Image 1 (cartoon, helix red, strand yellow):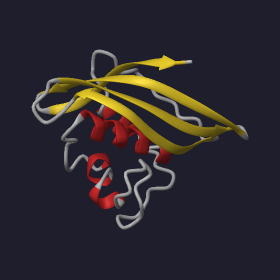
Image 2 (image 1 turned 45 degrees about the vertical axis):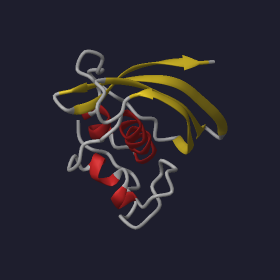
Image 3 (image 1 turned 45 degrees about the horizontal axis):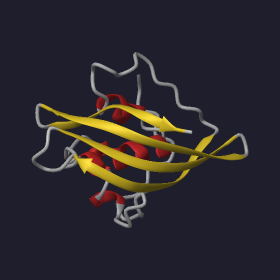
Image 4 (image 1 turned 90 degrees about the vertical axis):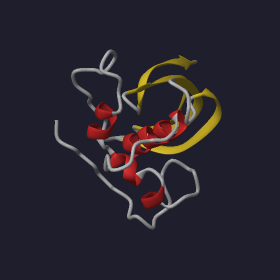
Length: 137
């Protein structure tokens, strides 16, 4: 499946993940696959950014093979607006697993919506991968 980035930020633009950092020093290298995420939270932020700009390749590449979908469709009418990280458990430089709890706000078909999830990550061959998550309603 081809990369379908719709609006990739410039390296000096603020990163969509809300870290306050410039894209080129935050999620940009993760999306380019030139620098693996050092923590589960960094991978989670890069996946949010990938959803925000429509980068299917990064989403699939960063998904654990055991839970990765065969196909991934992104709704072109969905606009990701903001990300808030509530907390992490493990997922650090010396861990093999971790969780990240977050809230992402988006707009779809003119309506605001919220996704709250506790995501699970695993480090496989030195790279963090998204495994799955529990969505809160």
